[in-house]
Length: 300
Image (cartoon, rainbow, N blue to C red; front, side, top):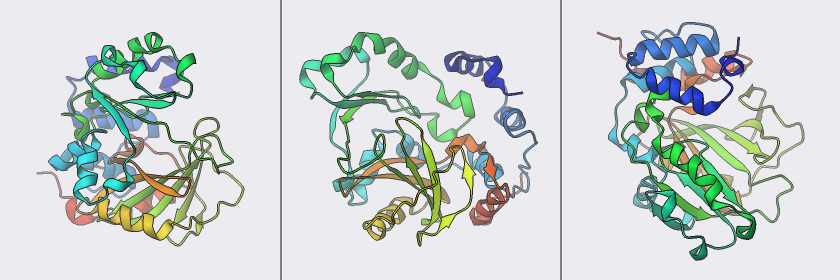
C-alpha cells in the first residue's frame, strides 16, 4: 500500500518523520526502503544504485557536499571552478519571507529555499502575485528538518535561507517551462543524461547516453515519445559537468539550456532519496556497477 494514500498531506508526512528522528539512521533507511521498494537493502555489500545511495547517505562524509547541496553556497563552488558565467542572476539572499520587498523585484522571478528540493515559487506576473499567501509555506519550508525526512547527510547542516533569482524563459521551447538536463556522474565523469521536459505541466523524461543514444528506461517520470534533438551545446555542457563533478564518487549535475545559453541548476547527491523505481529494474544494477566500489567498505 502506498503510504501517501494513507497520509495525503506532504507537510504531515514531514512532521511525522521529524518526530521519528530519534530512530537510528540505518534502521530508518531500511524501513523507508522497504515501504517504498518492498525489499530490504543490502548495506554490507550493496549492488544496485539505490542500495549504494543508501550507503552514500550513511557513511560517505565530505564537507564539500553540504556546501554544494545548499542552493546559495553552491554558487561559490561554481565560481571556484571558473564557471560563474553559467550562474543565474541572483536578486536576494535573505533569512525570512518578511524581508521580501516586491517593489524592488522585477515582474517575474523565482523564490527558493536553500535547504530543500522542490521548494520553489514561480512568479510570472508580480501584479497577480500574492506574497502574503505564500509566507506561511515559506516559513514551513525553512523550518523543515530535511535531514530527518530521508537521512540525507549533505542536508544536515545547511542554513535555511531564501534566495530570489531571475525567472528563466526559453522563447524557442515548445514545452511548458524550460528543459532540464540532469547528468548522472561517477568519479567526475558524466555517464547518462536525463532530459526533463514540460516541467510545469506534464513533467516527462527520457534518458540518453553521452553520445545521445536513447536508453530504454523509465524512472520517476513517464517517458516522452517524440524525438529530442541533440543539443548543439552538448560537448560544452559535458565539459562543464565533468568539471563540477570532479572529486565526487557520485553526483547528479543539473543544467538548463535557455535560448541557447547554459545555466547552472543544482548538484544532487541522493536523487529520489535513493528510492527510485526503475523499469526495467536491471538499470538499477547497471548504474550500481558504475558507482565506484572502492569507496564501499564493509561495516566493522
